[in-house]
Amino acid sequence: MGVHHEHREAYGPGDEHDDDGVAAEARAAMVRGMVDEGVLDDPAWRAAFAQVPRHLFVPYYFVSRLGGHDRLWCEDPDPVRRLRWLRGAYADGALATRVRDGELISSSSQPSLMARMLTELDVHDGQTVLEIGAGTGYNAGLLSHRLGDERVTTIDLDPEITESARTHLAAAGYRPTVVTGDGAIGCLRRAPFDRIIATCTLPAVPSGWLAQCADGARILAPLATGLIALDVGEDHHGRYAEGHFLHTPVIFVPLRGGTQESGLPVLQRIGGLPRRALENELFRFMLSLTAGSLDPHEALSLWEREGRPQRERFGITVGPDRQWAWLDDPSGPYAWSLTN
Image (tube, rainbow, N blue to C red; front, top):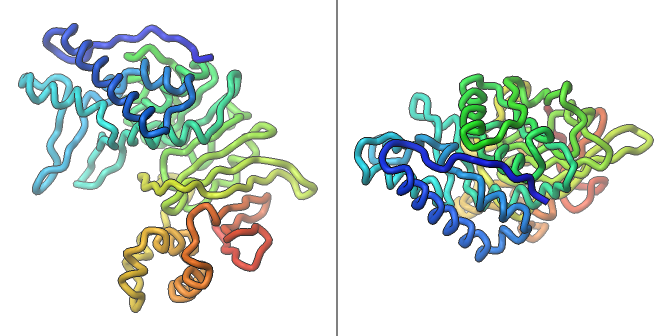
């Protein structure tokens, strides 16, 4: 069962009822599209996307134009541009919400990708969730609608991001715990968590997260250009997490804080590999996953020998002392160390 919240619909100047109607119509169309796409089968998540007003979380965002970015915002005096902002808030696409020196530093993810990730997170009533990367607060709003404010914690390193996320959440009628801090460390004072979801790309899974997980916890995080779903367990060595990558390719803003960025920049340093390989998205995923552990030419040879494996054949194991990526089998011959 979802948790019902009252929320405010209108945002911006002009006739509030007009904004209400346009927002409700656009939101319903967004949900219909996701249902048709098959990413919103769960009635609880369908209700969350249908009721949480995304436009309150993106009072402005940037769209690319020749030579830079154009800012659309809720208080634009031009009604045509304001309508473009409102309708755009419900398009099934990522929205650039913070740009610094021409570089994207924060965004609101594509709603259908968020729905896929929330479904894969496999939350149940009464569970607690830690979100790494507060973004606009929209994802925390969806989680709060599903589970209740008191069961949701979202953390971000940037105080500007957490302050705006808290403001957006309050405007929409949600009050989860919003923490300014290093997501790589987690949030010990709110632990243990049944689920951890990251909305930023990791170079490796921070080892400290495992200690903050409840028994039977699940971790879902972008790593390399894939999404890893890890189930947390215990053996005679201690706490561990293990799982496969999902089919879906993803690109997120990198995690800032306790872990160092790595991965895709390796592509710029490669010479002598055939263009057909470098243009293959699945090979680039493997290259990013094995960066620092496997020579790129060896990676290509293995990739072709193994029949150009899909993401689902790769996985990660996180133990008390080390973690590694692998192909097909955690204890098999193809394994590469990850460092955090």
